[in-house]
Length: 513
Image (cartoon, rainbow, N blue to C red; front, side, top):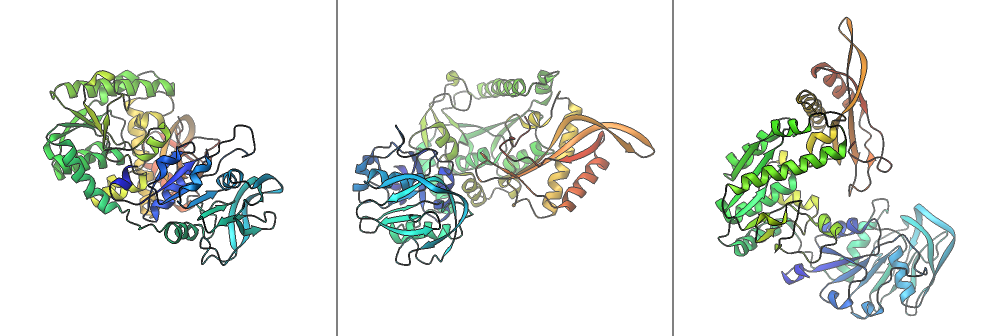
């Protein structure tokens, strides 16, 4: 439990397979309490240092054969527990209550009444919560009492105040539950007695000091893309070891308009970093000539990137450590264990086994994306980079449908820049999860001046998302779409039509390829 050992009080989320595990952890951290995610089968002995435990939801039934359940000893640790949805049913099942199918399953916004005597619901009036269940608790375990109810779910919550065990059938972590944030605060502060000492300002400078001590006089190499994660990771290491860090910035010619120059300007000239910029655009585009299959594009770009990176790294002589911008969702999704500043190197990020590094520096592996941005701001990185839109590793190659040519790259760069300018002009850049332009590969007829033309179709894409696993298409104001479309058609040669993508994920993906 690394954070508690470094002086931060922590809460742990035990994941039973629900889709909101990361969202729960983020909601906890938003309330200045450090939170980690572990699998539901974690040995109770590993949880003794935490201030609280939260069970997530899950897709199954707790009474099904081989259903994911926790061990009974977990409830004897003396640590407050909050079970959510399936997690509430786990608590009931394991402790001797009953769970079964509901006569009227509940999905969506549901009016619910709460006990005024419950610490969990202190200050929470009768209001709407977000339900999503076929099963429900039909009898509470010994020592528990119901503490909330809805029209079709009389035990919408239960609690054993003596043992500080709480369970809710609904999802307090989602925005659709009116006072969900208040409930989480009550659990963290009134029940778990957390100190609320998790702040990005202190994290940033504590991390710089730890990196300085851990790295010592060893040399560090970083593959800098200019993206948020690699930029903030590089800056933390730079603040710690200065010129002992060398960044290799491979410009594959598929970045957004002026992006390569911006990265070089900020890090090399403003922050005096050791940066080697490799302008390899011609090399990448020549390899991609005639390639239209999206998976082949990705594979070829990835392999070529490694070759370029290796060639430049070989010129530097012995470098002991590799810095990567791994963040917490990467750790959770890969099933990695305890976070650490430096871990043994084992083929991370697609680099081959024989690159010769002693270890990997991953200063952001405890953080979610929004926390990374706050650290970047604390370190003084300009907003243009801190709030840079998420960008795929293969760059514009997966936003150009069909063959990639220098002309088509230039066309998309201009169209995408105009779209981003109009979003910023409308003050919407912080309101939208991700937005970009796509060169669709579809040609259509148009009227330019006194004649007919036949040119490219550009699609504009904008989505709202909390975790990028699901996303809703963003309802862009018509005037913003109108200005962007008008400018693209008039200012970008060869474009005759602009369309807007109104497909959510699922069934679509966020990117087009």
